[in-house]
Image (cartoon, rainbow, N blue to C red; front, side):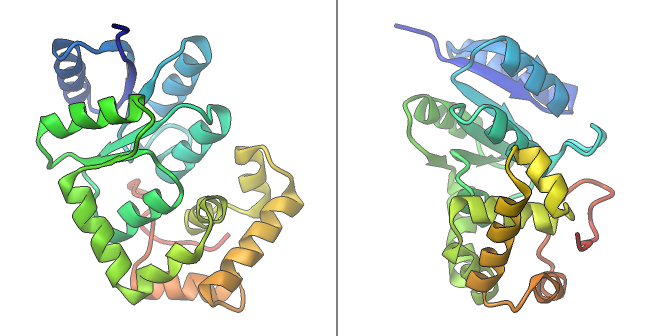
Length: 225
């Protein structure tokens, strides 16, 4: 039976070491364990893996963090499923990640068996949400301020998330390797579906409701692109 290959990235060495030992003890093949997003992208370019197990917030890597990092990996390696393992499990973040198509989410408050179950599920082409993540997603769908984001397509949610991280149209196009006019059209359509007259109104709404996706130390204040 073929071993499942897992690549791990977390900027906390102790967490990284613990995850590696847990996965290897459970019979998984850890193809690499690194501490920064840029290292992971280099590793994925050099070797194959079945699942990427990643932290969400890893600041200090030239702005390639959180939502931007996930967007970059999905753009470069669209066939690699991403399992987000994070201390952040609030409803807006979890719901937004699900809406943009992340394959799995496990909270760092969950038991370790949830991580193992999630890796197996993603390797089999399934999606996985831990018990805590499912509770957060349920709340995301119940609150009107959040629920409106379920009207977005996966790509529109991805672009909207980058807007909420402060990226301009040109920055988003470079990150996702898409045309500027394509990104511009997706942003405009996303605002329309969300019920906003334009991006300025969306930013005011996001600030008023505390909707932010950049969890780095320097990203706690929403800034318009």
